[in-house]
Length: 307
DNA sequence: AACATTTTCAACCGCAGTGAT
DNA sequence: GATCACTGCGGTTGAAAATGT
Image (cartoon, rainbow, N blue to C red; front, side):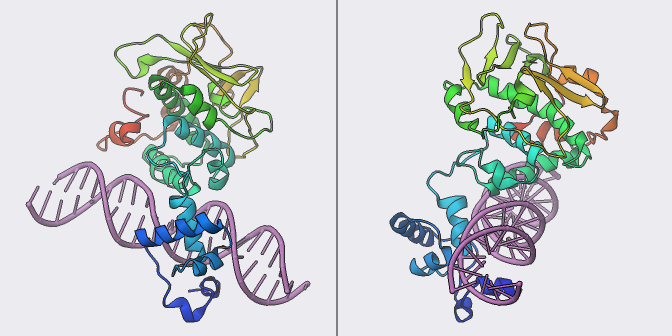
């Protein structure tokens, strides 16, 4: 153990008494009640004062990742997954920063999601998870599928969930817009029964809406409560975004232009993208392991249907 | 049912940044 | 400016749970 780690234990004479490993209910209860009375912070002192035989660090982690009342539990929604993908493409492994935009989700949870789900996909595609190829694949397949799932499960109150989720920064430009400003989700890519084709549109007022009929927009829209933020990230391929027109860079010098409000607009669905994209660059490992069918469980998004 | 393998995720570690002394 | 204590972040680990054979 390093000297720093020893220092973290703060009092060597107490080192042997410090507990490690999984927290017990009793410890959690002690921590909750202490914080309820005295608030959080000053973790080393808190640990001692609360009578916990834990390091301050351990207390902080347990509180922030598990015990804090506003922690959201359960699977990440498609909306949240989509946001993680998008924000990661901009900021990389800035888990804490990404978590700030997902209320109730912790950096640890997002990090775990990325490592266990997203990187797994990358491995199975035989591409590096941070590479441009992977980002392209995410945008061409995963994001449209997530958007479709969002649309399919368009719960009774999409407004509230998306408004919460989209409560981003205020530097002025859209992040979700890069993949959702206006493009079609073609249900043919995954379903034998075909609901009407729908479009995702974001207007100048950050209204993010879906439309089954572009002339007569449906009411199932939601609004970004603040202008969305985008920031430079070297790993992110360039997006062209002007006047709510999004062009996807799907290959070098080749863009999918979503500048079309009509039903004949260019599809962004995976099947169509497949027609355009040169997938010979991917070394798909489809034989034997069935990754496309089973790799994501309920969140199987890159399935054989889509391919 | 039993065992093996894989997946998940809570917890730990080391490091960097910051403020106080 | 040097040192120390503390906090927060990102990477990693390993036990438990889930899944496969």
